[in-house]
Length: 235
Image 1 (cartoon, rainbow, N blue to C red):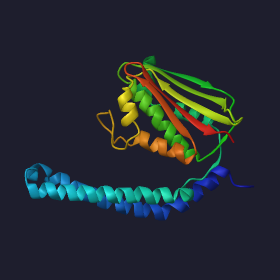
Image 2 (image 1 turned 90 degrees about the horizontal axis):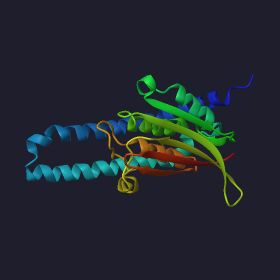
Image 3 (image 1 turned 60 degrees about the vertical axis):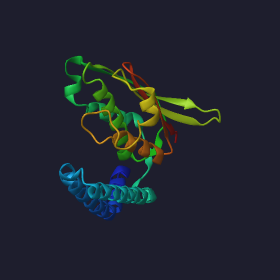
Image 4 (image 1 turned 180 degrees about the vertical axis):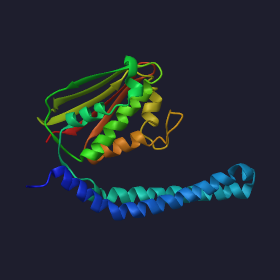
């Protein structure tokens, strides 16, 4: 009996990521210790000109090293992204089944699913699940206070060149965002409107979509909600 393609992908991923992850964790831990020491001395030494100069040098060097880590990961993308035929409807179905009850209890947030019959796409199921989960979680967070409606939709779009695109829509009726924030800051790393969080979620989502030759479009209005549309090439 032949092995399940997903089982093969999982084994390949583990084998490819093991050495890379060890180095990555080591590098990130070193940067974390450095920034932790900086924060520990920040309040006591903030007014010291020499300390301020040291802070500037440390932060500049840390950013340079972080850029290097990102660059190495990007150069190794073919080793860690394993693409097989993926059904985006199935991914969305599984994510809905795992939605946390705290958002859905008592009908505070309604989930509306509109899945069309769509072809599969070439993709890494784990990464695509992560990207969509981030978008769904952000939508739930935007409606956590007042409630609302989460709409998940898939459809096929014919391009002018006769090719087919799979369009995945994640829309909410939450707090929304200003046009300026969407344009300048939405996908920037370490920028967030949440009280807790690193602001890396949407940055990671866009990177994952880009690794699948896809694009993300977003429209939002303050007080009215936000809509993300993801475009992928049909298989």
